[in-house]
Image (cartoon, rainbow, N blue to C red; front, side, top):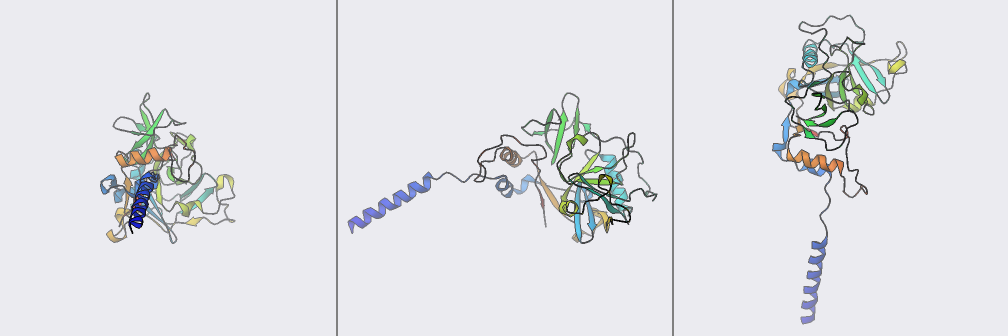
Length: 298
């Protein structure tokens, strides 16, 4: 009996030592986001959500008035004036963009549209307190995050711009001095074409439904335009600002506060993955590769 007791004590001690010797499981960026406290999330205003219906598919775009206020104001006015009624996705270029609007229409704009907005391709850096990316950026002297957005900057020249990341939405335009009104828009559906930064106004990002755009058939015309008479443009059923919709039908989203300690931990892990799948940590992360987490809320 005494020997059984001693054996049991030794087994328990060995089991406890084994348990204590096991290192904690490495965290993933997803673990950090899943454990984020409620205080680390920020609501997105319904005035900053553009809701597009493409048949049964819904596409939700978060607008960026802090970077392109005149273009965003135009977009809201166009949506509230039902200007996009009859609009379609008429260009889908592989590894580049899906573009929509009325495409060369003479349809008059609703009252209040600024026909030639300023070139809101960048804004002043003043007033922006960046959470640094922590890695070099190939297209700007510095980069980081502010109010939920990735931002490329030049401290010496004093400018800040939104990058052309996957899913980001820009304003189609003709050659300068045209700046586009916001009536014709595109979403990036391929590798981030950062060479467009500071050449076109970026007005937001798709936070739901980018797959509905990226999975469309590619146009076979020049630059991915659908050939008239051979390929049918994809109609948009409706385009509304979320605040136009009944309260029960409004989509609700939050973004992870990029000034929070949670985001800092998340960003560090995006650059230094050390969980079970990864054998070599990159030691850095691209500005477009560190996407700001966004979640749907009830």
